[in-house]
Length: 258
Image (cartoon, rainbow, N blue to C red; front, top):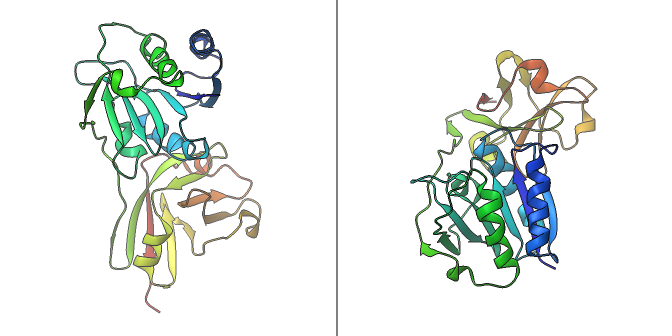
């Protein structure tokens, strides 16, 4: 049974979601349709990449992922099929793949179509997804290419005794996930004492939790989360809402000599 997933900025209550699901059912009735998220902020490609990057690997090999975020094609933003780690991704070439992938894809196919549509997910992406689900070789569905548009990716920087990272995702608990990895933390810090700072020097954390419950309710905490990134939270509180922290804001880690 082929798996087709949907990731979009439509909102679950939009008719777009049910229309696409219905069209998939007509073209490939054996497909199992799974909604990854329809709560991506409008046109927010980095957010969609983060959600999909941390979820697709839990699906079986051969899964097909339709990405419906900032997807209307134009002269510079062609629809593409990308095969990566034995998964198939269908979207417009809007820069998402540089944020989604850690390595080069196995194959990129540019979809050649004369269809002009304001709903490319329905008119272009679903028929392609169902052809793949029905066993068609993706090399028959377009032109093989190696070119993909690269979206700017904010990487953390570090110098002696300082890491500057950024918030890349706010989750449903209002926790802030940064782009700082534990490897970078160890490399820059070398077991030195530290302060994690954000928004102002008043927001300060000086330990890394192993579990959220180590901190009292309403207090700030930092933790290496399930996707291997430094997360800033308020235990049983709404950190981002209460502090005004948002995507793109700087997270600083200052290390001190003993």
